[in-house]
Length: 405
Image 1 (cartoon, rainbow, N blue to C red):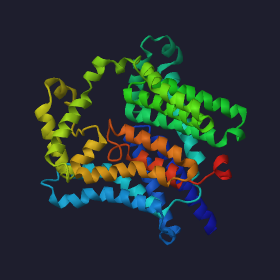
Image 2 (image 1 turned 120 degrees about the horizontal axis):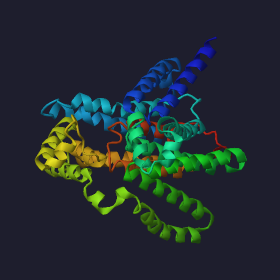
Image 3 (image 1 turned 180 degrees about the vertical axis):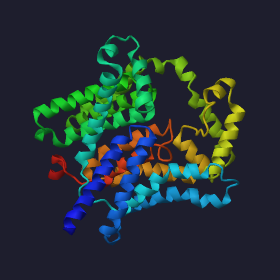
Image 4 (image 1 turned 90 degrees about the horizontal axis):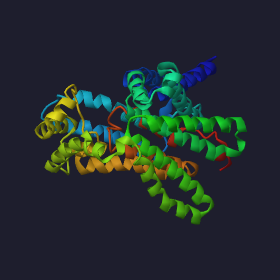
């Protein structure tokens, strides 16, 4: 009876994690429900399984300790800050770093298998896209509407999420499809291969029409990277030629997208935010200011530099970050913080098992790329980052290629 209860608890923790993974494509208030469920079930499991007895020194543990240190920097700086205006809000946004850091140290139960999570990404992405087009817009309306891209964007913003998280989630699903194919191609039935190819087509189509320059460009870079890698493994000369041609192909495709035009790029509001952040960084580049004082100084810098146009653009924003994880971290913790951040993004590639190294490279590169345009591990993407670390470093192997290796 006791063993059945423990098994049920393990499955509850697994299901809550899958629900959290599925919900990250939605606005944060949806994610929060499943995050709490996952944390609570893990808390109970922690004591039931006596997870503290299984700690062993490893590169993974060192990595997750560094993640915890990154979170603790906010508390270390706290006594030296001039006020606490934003402190609690900003700390709450980065609690996922602490949570997944602890999970990485104490481990997960054996039910956590990589194929479950990769397929969850794919199924969720396809389901959401079809839901928006068929049930929210209407298939015929979508087909015949000349401005279907804007129509899709409007409905997506209302029902699901803004383009940054939505596009990131879909790009992760493209990586998931590749990894499943790469790991288990010979064992996958033809009917499933067809379904995966259809899923890729639906996902890439959605990325091509959805708002967001960075998301569409990321999809092109991911596909190009995968293509290069698969050809390079088989024929290095051809791979080398493909590698030379890829930048020109990507530039040609990306330049056709309206939001990639020169006038649109010049009017990009993030450029103004980055300039304001750089002014703050210049004042204390080595040590930074802490999370609250950095935000207040950024507010002051932004107010001084912003034009009436930008003031109107962000008139409803109560708390506005600089939309760049690297600049935000440097404002907060200086060069030291930036080095730790870069380590957090790069080190998983080196400590992942051999079969997952290129998977780790693609996922961490996507995170690093996304961090140029938005808050990542200290914002609403932080839970997603923890999920990706579970896939790369903690989930059990259950794909054919991984078992053979």
